[in-house]
Image 1 (cartoon, rainbow, N blue to C red):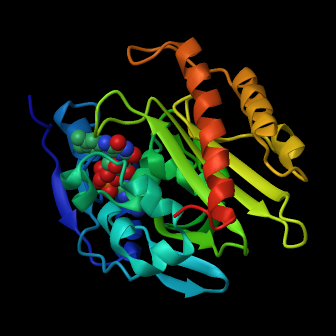
Image 2 (image 1 turned 135 degrees about the vertical axis):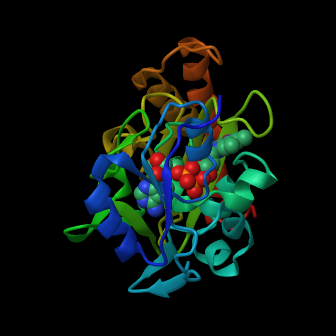
Length: 293
Ligand code: FAD
């Protein structure tokens, strides 16, 4: 069928894009990597009258500032795999990026596009929640910073206003003795995850027991989501024994309300939540102990 006709504008700054969004409103769409937008245009699921191409906006290299790793929204998935600063300070990002689509998708897709698209199974949405990321947002009336946990509000829906865009992603630098892990099940390589789980675990400097834990899930609801803190408190103060991890994984699986679709039944998704949560917690604990790479 091909996409419906649209005007095409290229910009060299986020500020210019914000002005254009103000002018055109909901008739306009931003183009970043195009890996989700272009298929949607081709299927005529979206029919914007104007496409604002962000690809000439300079994407700054990752930097560390004010205790955070700061990435341009235009950072490509491939850079997440290759950048040494990201590998050193946010190793969960390369861990998840290698699971995204295929090499063509990773060459073009951007972190800002992925978060703004808000697919409930998107690896980067799950990772952003697990690392407590924040996003810098620019709109026609100014800027604001949002927690990733406030960004995803429903299926392919975020809390961004129609005239707002993500300009940067901020990731707090990890505390000592923190480990991460990511686990997912896909039906075929390059597919979106059926279920994805990311874990972040911090160990106590004093006795090596778990002092903090965060978990994020993809593919079990209408958005990527964090596991409520009270469900994780039983892990705190423990040494992460097999029994305690089994117990937490079973408890979380009992609490989620997964859906059924052509890829998996709700019951299978619940089973995956238990299995992948267990593996992700064990992997994060091992990395926090320095026992896994
Ligand atoms: P675009 O497609 O350009 O834009 C997506 C949406 O976000 C559009 O609505 C656009 O207007 C908006 N947008 C873009 N940038 C911004 C911004 N800075 N601020 C506000 N809004 C913005 N993704 C996965 O997570 N996992 C997978 O396994 C996976 N597999 C894929 C397989 C294939 C074959 C393809 C084609 C895609 C796959 N994707 C997958 C999607 C891919 O990761 C996309 O790159 C990503 O979802 C969107 O990023 P983008 O930069 O391409 O955004």
